Length: 214
Image (tube, rainbow, N blue to C red; front, side, top):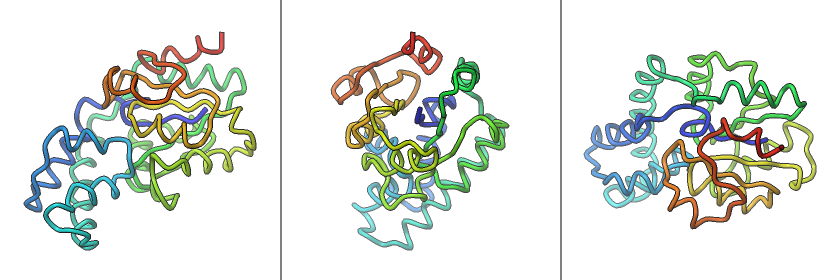
């Protein structure tokens, strides 16, 4: 199973969106809640590049500066408030008990992801962790899913279940050709947004995942 983190297995009560807004404001960039919501699930650097482009074009140094601000804002939140989605830890235990490999993937880079995993004490819950900076292009490209397959020795996409809370999670799974493409309603995007995208299941949260194997 390949699972997203923020909004899927980690509670996100708007912390990520607020970190985006604060980082953009630090550099004089205005972005609406709708604009920020539209890039949720993507690589965070790619998301920031999209959001700063109207003002700064393709200025790579500006993107890196905004990204550094984003990391600083997010670090302050995650080190204090990181918390699993209700039922996530129990689902992890169920997967391990049934010998189902788990890969966590995320649009965060390795530094932010490491900080988040340490805050949650999740160093041993997954077989691998794939980050946005591990691949040449983030979601909706399928590369993080393919990298997860490589990390676990999985050769058949028909053996992969992908779960996430955003449109780009579902699009990446479709582009990878996975067998089971699950959207959860615990994060950034609504049922209506997810329902418009390719999927096999929409469920309330990862707590309901074991029932899909039943």
